[in-house]
Length: 188
Image (cartoon, rainbow, N blue to C red):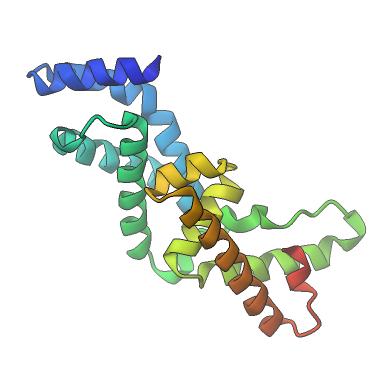
């Protein structure tokens, strides 16, 4: 249903009805802000990044080929905006909270150890190359399935699987280097 509405609104915008873009914004503002928040964990910054994504989408609307879902194109554009914005952040502003979900702290008795493990995992994920970090964030933190995450990144599912595998392997190695006993690596 939303794909039909998106196609209709895109057609209207391209025909000169700029007000039709508001329908696109209404449908996709919350998902784009939520995705941005997963990357920066700052609501104001996420809203700014989503606004920038909509601005770029509006300016580049004629470049959407229409052979796929509009939402896939919009989210891929949004991811590019978010990646660029995050590269400009100082290291201290890195989205640590985004990465907090990698390990579960279900055992109250192991709460302190679990927090230490989570911090180690967050630091390790931040050091990963962008292609692995983004794959892990979308798949694990945004809880997207393979097809959705691959579509958002603009890669085939097989490529995403390889990035997830390599990203987890890099994390294990980096965490093992941090804690030779393998304590932090158990989180993966």
